[in-house]
Amino acid sequence: MLRGKEREMGLGSAAVVSLAAAREKAAECRRLRQEGIDPIDARRAARRHAALDAAMTMTFSQCSQAFLASHRAGWRNAKHAAQWAATLTTYAWPTIGNLPVQAIDTSLVLKVLEPIWTSKPETASRVRGRLEAVLDWARVRGYRDGENPARWRGHLDKLLPAPSRVHKVKHHAALPYAAMPEFLAHLREQEGVAARALEFTILTAARTGETIGATRGEINEADGLWIIAAERMKAGKEHRVPLSRRALTIVGQVVPAASAEQTFVFPGAKRGRPLSNMAMTAVLRRTGRSDLTVHGFRSSFRDWAAERTNFPTEVVEMALAHAVGSKVEAAYRRGDLFEKRQRLMDAWAEFLATTPVARGKVVPLHA
Image (cartoon, helix red, strand yellow):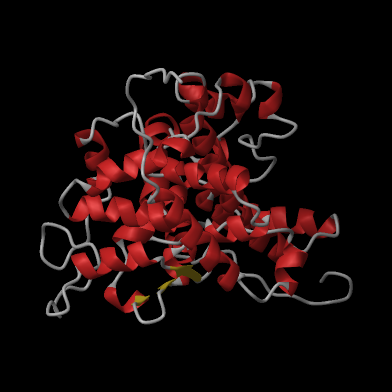
């Protein structure tokens, strides 16, 4: 009887529990009852704690795998998930992979990060963020409790130098816009699909992945329009690209009308596959410009637009498929300034087609 309520409780099977043991259990239950504790509730609580302790024996590597499995569907592509897995397996698992996730503390997090914090600061910063995400997931799922030892603000920022102070950010190597016409003239002399893909990328200010993944169905030659699906864009939003006359000419060159089997605008060596993402970089190397990057040409375009044109900043940023303004402004902005961007890209193509200034000996002219 407890608080006027009768309850019945078994102490175990007679085949397993001896009479002496049963008497000890009964005495312990009476003691709990005297203290106002229901022995049945106490037993259930003990079982829950035992189950929680068992759950907390999940290792960090097991939690990492479960985290990746639960988030993979929300990431843009398989490559992003592979990068997550690669950084964790390479830098975190050798040190803490087999340890219970509940046991991960600040000293263990530092043991993972300190060897690479100054030698590979960008990678180390990503590893820290991914450690924090996995440990947060484990806490919410009940596999650990307490503060997150991988958090930066108010914790690791007191123990490690800020990544921005460890190294200077190195931007993609870009060609000064004034040298672009000469570079394009030389590029047009190069043969092959990769050379045309690079020229197309420069003319459209696109990213490498957007160009090599372009399909025939995305391009409307009649309207001079290239529509890139949202799932192929970094921002996850459909992007309409106006194509200049030269860009359309390139499409016509690499996609013969009779080639119905060609899916990708810029096909690779293997049938049915797109151009390699290193093919355009190889073109730069062949032309003796290994100091440049494909992505850097977007910077050349941005500098030209700012210094040589009067197009508004938002038009240029939209041409680069960058987010424009705040989230509130984006919510009210319905258009994509396509007509203005069309004039911008035509002006860019016209500038790139400018005849390079001949360099030679200066001869003085006398009256």
